[in-house]
Image (cartoon, rainbow, N blue to C red):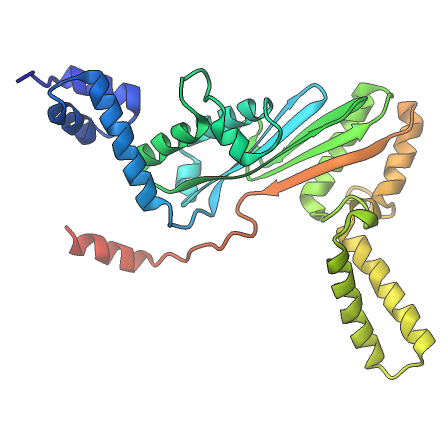
Length: 309
């Protein structure tokens, strides 16, 4: 039988990232054959990842990457914020954003792209990471925007590392004007978007069903006042204008100067930039938004662990 040395186990651990005991078992099970042990661990990782896939992943990180007139943003979820601070996890998310710039913003297509010259896919790398770290993880969403001519500006609120954090924003400004001034305007707009959380760029791009539902609520409330129909109609129109000012980017009060709407800020900036400016697109990802977060009972978890000891 081939001797399983400590150095051989360490080499396997360095290559795969798996735990020392798993590496030793892989070598023992495969008579010391290093490459077969690598495959064995990968298969084991697939099994471990499948078992973890049903567990809620609502923490994690958002990453952005901008190249010229293109920008991408991705969100990768994990089960705990502790993992979000893990170097391996952070490295994966940052690399994923770098890879995503080659794609079209589709998550499934991104999963199939080769991971950083490794010879295996992004999805395979994710599965290996799940097996190594021991938590369920999920590439939740991705988006890509572009502009020509103009600039793409990325902003990460309270970033942990460059381009990596919990709330990321991309803004596309279409203009033939001064690029440096466009960048400065884009940065301010991205900060606004991070804080104000607009749901759409303009009124026309809001979901029609959402508008109808909102209007119906205000109609019912106004009708209950008993006022004449023409007064009710004016009340509803006024409340809808207020609604649009809350959720539509161009209608929102600018956070840096609340006396101005975003549309007014852009129009005034165009004069200094030397050409018309249009916000052609924006994306805002806040990590875990819309995902049901699990409520951990630490005492119960500790008791369960001790009970299995």
